[in-house]
Length: 347
Image 1 (cartoon, rainbow, N blue to C red):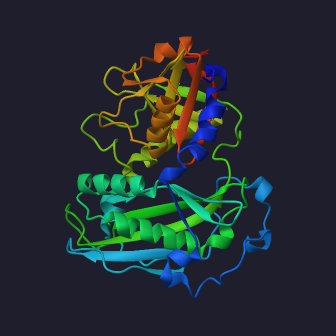
Image 2 (image 1 turned 90 degrees about the vertical axis):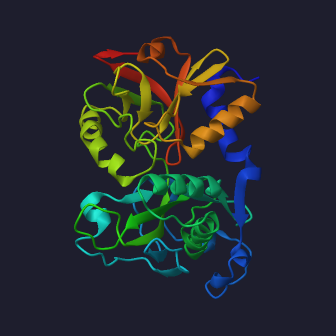
């Protein structure tokens, strides 16, 4: 049994390695459409782009290729294709621009020592996009189409995947109402895009503990809204509170529920966990909290380790008595929390 003081590091390692059975590994042989793009060869460091991998942050680094496919009149998505990464053409009256009809996902490809690339549970991202698409009145790629698009994008940008232990290739699938529409209604056409960028640690602190600010003025989501799906419209409203917190020296914002204003919800871009003894608690997903893929994996791993996991309402006051607090998400992976400030008091 691992002790709670080492829980963060143990779960971070476990999330990367203990669930290898749920990873999707592939080489250039698994995507016939890319056989002309890659020559079969043993992996070497020279296969990677020549850049400073040791100081890779979490910012956009344009890569070589992106993937796209379209769907009209709610029919099935047509066969997609790779193209050089670049600008796209979009009508000023596109549904995504006028009414925010869009979703995105985020997942990562990692490079193994033998050169193979590994994807972490891409089927779960495909399922989550389908759920979100239904909420936003959008057609969605099938699970097969989603995973195939992600694989092709990763393989086409293989030279941008950092060497083992230096980072990952962040992959961003994007589903949007690209068709022109004037009145409030679902768009007549939809575009599914996938692009990628090599990334390092999400926070500037690296793996150092985070300093969170509990936000009790602004709220991320409300009951009956779309907080439980990964719609693009959930994120811009969070920028006000996030910018204010960062200007005050905090790493990120921890939101409370919008009704009682006392229960934990989630951080701007990740879920939160509270540890007390052998019990790991995380806010229940009741429609206002995104069901993170990393969150789900941590719950499964923690249970495998013998911890009791509770998904429930967590009053903010419980933070004062916690043994440990950490955040999880695709971008942050597993990040420890060093301090939390609430109403001027730091714990």
